[in-house]
Length: 114
Length: 112
Image (cartoon, rainbow over all chains, first blue to last red; front, side, top):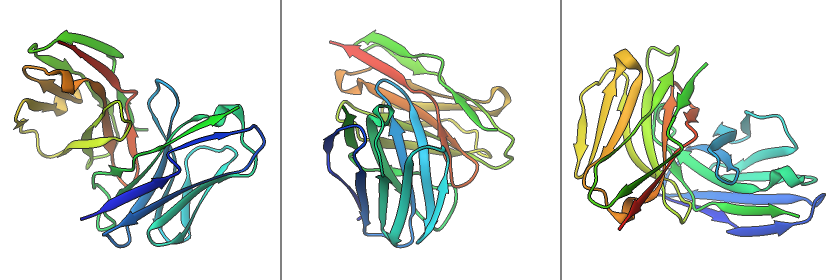
């Protein structure tokens, strides 16, 4: 069966510090991968998605970036965090065999920028 | 552009009541899928259902049922005989391709 992992679970970082969040998927090949952010009490904002290694589509211009160095690894990064980057970050995957497949979400990382 | 509207921000019911969560979408896609997800207090989103744009049959799964009406661009979700464990945020989503657009979510409180 497929499993999606995210770490860390929680993170407290000072403004201006770098960020690296990691997501890995097990039990499937060539998945579509996604990063979402959920601000407190708000909906889901799609940040990036990837349909293959090295292929990243950005949905919201900001100080975040994403990379996919391996088929089942998706990394969210920032060189300098802003207060507004605080939120709940969710990684998700869907089967790469189609474009209409449901997404399965990881446990999330709660980021607080102070 | 696609848009999903969940007009109900919060709903509060007493256990055993039925509750309907509304979802209205806008799309230019001729082929698309609609989804519902549940986000319990733990934070992880749980997939509930996927429905394609060509299938307007209602679906029932235990206490959950979904009503898809293409004519009104709605995909509503009903929980029958609600339970405290149903308390969560529920998200409706639409996809016409790789991206899924989600509504803002409806927070459901079920009181004992």
